[in-house]
Length: 502
Ligand SMILES: Cc1cc2nc3c(=O)[nH]c(=O)nc-3n(C[C@H](O)[C@H](O)[C@H](O)COP(=O)(O)OP(=O)(O)OC[C@H]3O[C@@H](n4cnc5c(N)ncnc54)[C@H](O)[C@@H]3O)c2cc1C
Image (cartoon, rainbow, N blue to C red; front, side, top):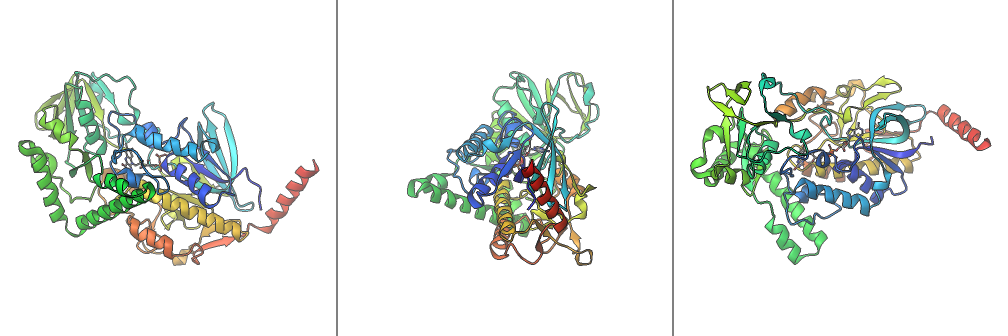
């Protein structure tokens, strides 16, 4: 077996990377691993995003790990609490010592003779280093850390005030007593508006089209009851399953009977907003869950609107002047600060150039396999979370599965595990998802292929995936285990002999 610096190289120390490291510790502790992380801290998303009010928009009982209870009283958690949780787990499980911070992975090349990955990273000092590993695990998230989505807002250069993108929030941005316009209608805008309204003079959310929104409690009373009645781990599991089941039911209902769900959401919005309800700002031209539903924790956005501190304008930008935004309707919004909450730029595999024996890998040539590996790509797996459920549900499943595959590979004395797909057996590709969000539409062309049938799918159904992971064995006849060519074994032996002789 080829000697490598580490058995498993994990790229990224966010939720997915920490999950993989913890699963290695639980399932195959005899395997070594290294995490290469381009930032100087753990946390990924939760370390990068520092805008006011930054929080989860799904409950922490499912955004938290399956192996570690979420203890904070708020189920919808602030970024700082999520960071604390991740850092605590990394310390308690001894994961931190295996993280090499400030290492941006640039490329990874698979050597089929030696059955190993050569991973090149650039350190924060600009120096490049090489790590070899038998397995490559992409926990690098789904968006570009360097560049947000460029919405190309025409004329914004004419604006004389400050323009801020939430991805790069200036530490000392002073918005107290100022007029702020937040351009966007997604989760970030819905979070920012009430948080900034606490001290700004006015905050206006300027949207082109509305988003479906629903108020929900920050705290989960059932979780608190379960904690009184049961031991912590059992209570956590119960809350988790309650939330998984409720979300799956609500999502299914939105797809089966969108009119009913739209009526329900509309009714609740009217109750929340009273005279402030205007369908123009709250009724999107698509069905609920055709795009992600926006959570409004404790109705904070609605409260800020009712208090006259925040407002929503649905219009199109005609241009900018020194101190505001001109709208196509002829109206104008005064602004001291403009926040462009226009979204993320999706990228795959942390922009790492992946190659097989020097041949660049085109992700679009490969099919997803079981939502985590890829047709004909050896010893590599990947996390791309659910669009309709918490990201961590998939991160945990994929980490467990990767550990099972790696264990099986070693158990068989094999060097390679690869989902094999011959060209003549390729299934018909289908759309990777049925969502209309701008950022997902823009990403479709980057995505590996997806079929309608398992195992060549990227399903957005946690319960069905879970059944599949339980029922379908690791050695399912599609995933092939192989030895690396004998010739490389000899050369390895020779290399080792040489080293030993020296
Ligand atoms: C503001 C915001 C709120 C969100 N809220 C939710 C929510 O409530 N629920 C939900 O399910 N999802 C949410 N998401 C999606 C969220 O990104 C995931 O929940 C989750 O945090 C992703 O974890 P990750 O570890 O896979 O990726 P990330 O958090 O993106 O971490 C990836 C890590 O990989 C590192 N990395 C990337 N490329 C390289 C490279 N080339 N070399 C070395 N290191 C690299 C990054 O520096 C980063 O630390 C939210 C996203 C955002 C932006």
